[in-house]
Image 1 (cartoon, rainbow over the protein chains, first blue to last red):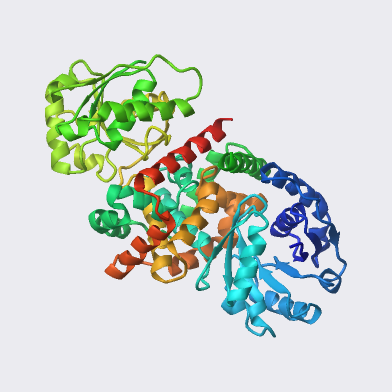
Image 2: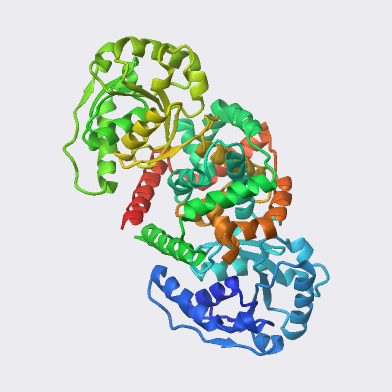
Length: 302
Length: 302
């Protein structure tokens, strides 16, 4: 179904969503209170949309219209879906929802891209709290297929899953809302140990990153961690793994570190990543990442 | 340089190494005390070698000879390199090294594929402890490029890095030996939270795996965790990230779980992975994984 979508917040997440949604034929109206965010918005959207096309399965639909609205009210006129990408401040988002609810009809879903806030916090004070869902994309959202969804009602959940699946995303459903959803909880847990390895002088920043990219990262790009241990159990699968190696995993968990981001540790991380970057700018590294992601995504559908 | 290599231990790691090393032109003699392990060894090596060829860069060299030796002494005759893949039992490996040292010349490196033991433990009692290195591959080693190396002496480290790089591996060097090296420490840290999310009913096993595969796993297959946070800092890089978001990461770390593998949690994991496997056997899942890894590896070198 073609939706009329309001993108609220025109930063890095907003331009990504706009590129993806228009590439799949939806009409989008975007709004941001800051002229700095809207100034080059359409250029950024065009650039990201070209990347979407590189990994788009099937025939390319007619591109949806993209309109920059002058006001929030204008952006929300006659929309059927709102994707909110405002800064991660609870009060600011709650105020925004109060305004949004005055402008849109009761059937409109308000999807928050929030990475660090939860539905339970965000929905407080809403007239129709169940119209709010969290739909957290993984950066950059126009390339990464993951969307983590929490919806408090079955029908909202089903509508959301169908909507994001229609954008060739891979919606993943949470039973309970949790800080960091799933992916950022996993990323945070891994990074804690990645920091520990550097803090404890076991290995350099670049060695840790190379070990991840050429080892577990590559494996996890094709198979999840639970499934990998299922295979690790041989013919007996996860049950055999847990029986034979569960106790040693529990012992291993005890040996993992709890680093603090002290000035010394921060200096090691900053210096180490500078060595790894080897003079490449952030923009150049992001471009390399996107190119590699596009190759990896195309390989998956070959 | 062409090496004459002894593969000691003909299980899943041994056949993988033999496939890779012969594919790169080295002559290999393999030995295992168990006839069950040697029975179909050559068939397994042939199968894995075909997969190596699918991802091999450049021209394919003449395949090295593969010989099954009847005794350890025979396997070690005139070799220049030993790759040991015995079961993960400290005493067993130490006894094996004592025997190996009686058969090989002083210049021969003994490389242990150990995943869970450390150089400090393994080298105890050796006549030439510095000839021992740990060279931990990531399963399946004939496809995954990571080899984690700890060597106690500079010249041994340099020889080892050159040897594995010559097999198109990506050697990563540890400054200190640590249980789980780098990759399995990261994997263990991530899995602890993956188990926690299931234990706490935040999401299903299959949702956690899908979130990883389509989110951080894919990203980590092209960019390490430290580098990803460097980009997360925008123009200011890691320094800006740590300044603005370091404190929130430290708070996030406090909210991560410390699950126990209780019977109830184990049941959830076993049932959840069965739902995800949807009737596919371990062998079929492993084949899918290998096919996907081969596509991903080929995409990286396109």
